Length: 207
Image (cartoon, rainbow, N blue to C red):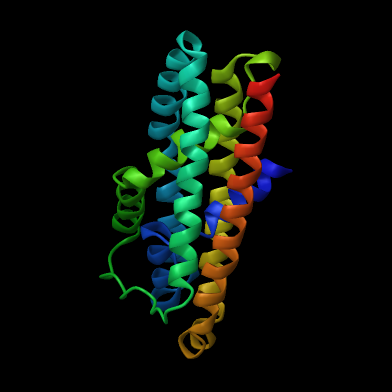
């Protein structure tokens, strides 16, 4: 449940994928926005093997590095939480609408936007190890399952954004406070999750 809650909080993080989905939905409708979401999802077929196999090999050789990455990931979540809270204090507009294109072009744009976004790899590297335990099985298998669940969750949330943006496009443009409230909730969730993970890491280390 903690993993799902944390992953949901990450899915609310404003970024290129969300901006692309919202603007596609608001300007071109649900079908085009969904193609962009599918492109972002398919980027996971490249990202997941790179992150899962590489991290698992390193962590197997160095339990200390495993703990360090978990703590570093928690600190990165603190940074994200603070940034989100800062954004929540300032009005923010939706991204400008991208250039219209054919369905294939929209899919490729979504794929490349996600694949070339370094934050996606940072998220996977910082996020997945927080919810694995070498004592219960292979780390690579746990991260593979978690990464797959996260990507599927992203596909569902992206489709929801696309549908919602297409349906409430007029309401969103009139009520910019919604974006500020979203950032405020995200910041609070990130700080709470980071605090829990740091405490858990300290407890496991002391045993």
